[in-house]
Image (cartoon, rainbow, N blue to C red; front, top):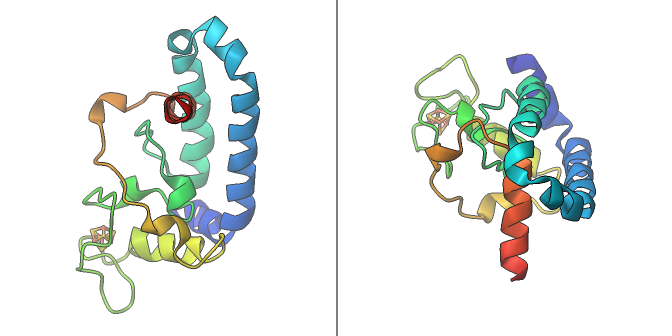
Length: 152
Ligand code: SF4
């Protein structure tokens, strides 16, 4: 729902902190989660993510979440699904080129990111193209695996 996702961007700082908390708890639990098996846990966790993030951010469950870097605005709501926006067609009033009645997702991402560490903070991180094979899978578990790989 657009009103809720706009609210979420206005409260990006608090939600970003909460999101970080969830990640920290999952990191602590990761040894246990690995013993149970990420594959086994993927479906139920993806369901929880879908409900919570769907309500708060209109998440499209892409399975590779960028919310922490995009001011808590889900880029999958951009009609062009740009992961590194905006497209250049943003209207003078901030409206989307494709859906003029909607504020550009990247204008919202900018507003949200201004509440975080620095004005441009996460928005400067170049996002990889969407891997559609991850659609509907848990991005929390995906993030845990990525963290582990980075640590080596
Ligand atoms: S104006 Fe913004 S939301 Fe609309 S298509 Fe371009 S980047 Fe996406």
